Image (cartoon, rainbow, N blue to C red; front, side, top):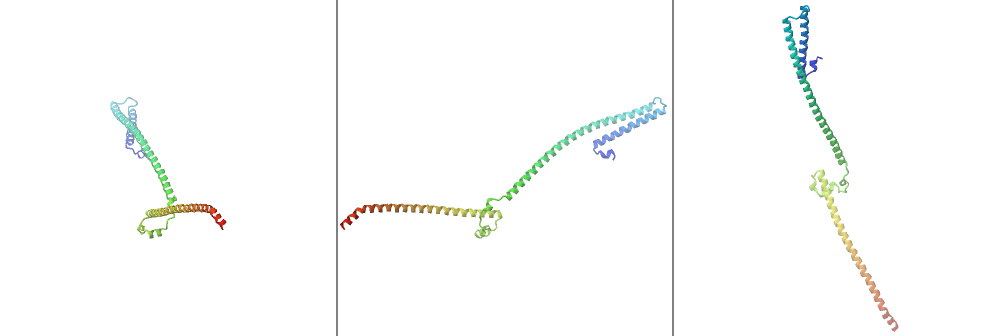
Length: 214
């Protein structure tokens, strides 16, 4: 494959083109110089030949100077390209690292979501009444979605438990009242027994007197 097919950068292509011209002119100068020396049998060149050679030499030096300028510009362009490439690479590395962080965060969030979805919530263990029975008692929730229906069932269970708790508290109060009344009655009976025993003890002398009389 030819070099001009490998190098596609316009500035480098210009360098190759000028270098080719300078090379061709140098080869032409060597050829003219060799021909002129053979024609003059080793003597010095004629003024015309010298003028022609000098003209070709100036053209070659011009191309070489142009080539140096292009070479210097190519070097500067290569440095700028390296700098731009390094900055672009740093940006790509930064974006790649950011993408990796997003990927790890996404994987973490998916794990958290999966854990939440598989978590056995306490409400799933509540002894709720069957859905059919609840809807029969509360037909206004027939068109509710699964989440709203569950919330309504939990609210119903809470209300039922609060009502039962209130009944339990009332029963406890009645029980405490009955216990207090029973205790009072026991105390009254105990006091009555004591009074009766004192009455019997007080009546014994009278009873003895009646026994003596009889």
